[in-house]
Length: 328
Ligand SMILES: NC(=O)C1=CN([C@@H]2O[C@H](COP(=O)(O)OP(=O)(O)OC[C@H]3O[C@@H](n4cnc5c(N)ncnc54)[C@H](O)[C@@H]3O)[C@@H](O)[C@H]2O)C=CC1
Ligand SMILES: O=C([O-])CC(=O)C(=O)O
Image (tube, rainbow, N blue to C red; front, side, top):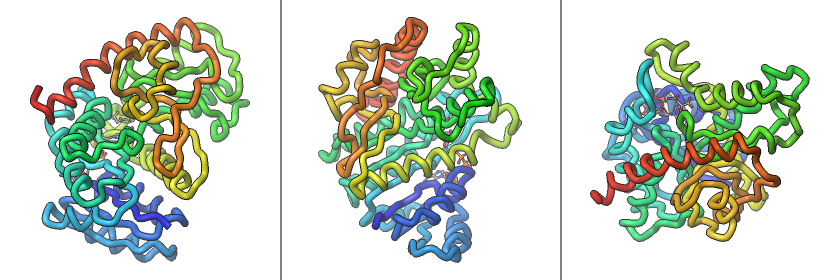
């Protein structure tokens, strides 16, 4: 019995994500918010014969109502990339959008889980944290950057190389952040051992890090990943919902490491150092982050090097996000 709001529900991700949330049997209330087109999306989805009650909220005047009484807010609001752009190029527009939306959640549903899809995730999550801190309601266990698409791609791309692998069952921990070289797949610690040459590990790692670019290029100006992202977002939301309902679920996600200082020690020693945020496999529970799950082995030398590269870029991305709110 979970109440969910999708903010940016009329967009390329928002529409299929809202559809998938309507099909989730544990969702009882589904609030769809956008600044355009959302009444039509909500009317359409509301006819699907599941028990979730769908409501439309259009424009900033209805934002507070959209995020009142919710357990989970999923945020895919904001502009996507065009060819030639990096995720950081989206900061100018998306930083302000995420700040406004999180301010509204902080005021109306301060204990809601917040799952941020809007890019650049490495900076929008720190923005959200600073907004929540300023309002005195920050609980690091309840704020998540959605990096599930990297995990989904890792499983699928392994199968492209090894057709015997079950892409749906294979889990590769992906840590770090969500852009280019900040994405660090730990192929050596996959749920089923994969026999890969050094060259294959390099090639696969690069493909997972830059998988988003493949879609941006193929869409040729019409945006970035939407359908695979809606699937990934719905999978992550379902993990949170199952956790709210008392199940223990493990998912990698970009979180404030303050959510579990003790559990963070392994990742800090691996190269995250003093960073405030990092994507790590997280054990989820009714209060959000239950603990940072152990990696379950020693990453390879190649992976440790990749973590060092990721940490450097993340440091800047995190500082840029925090400064947007604190002005520091
Ligand atoms: N975390 C991840 O793995 C991924 C993140 N993304 C990011 O997700 C975001 C959305 O992508 P798309 O759905 O393709 O874009 P889109 O442009 O199709 O949809 C965005 C929606 O946000 C709405 N919006 C804009 N300003 C808003 C505001 N102030 N309040 C509420 N809604 C607002 C727009 O009206 C639009 O309906 C982009 O920033 C993109 O980079 C995309 C793919 C993967
Ligand atoms: O590439 C983009 O801009 C969208 C995204 O985050 C992804 O597909 O991983």
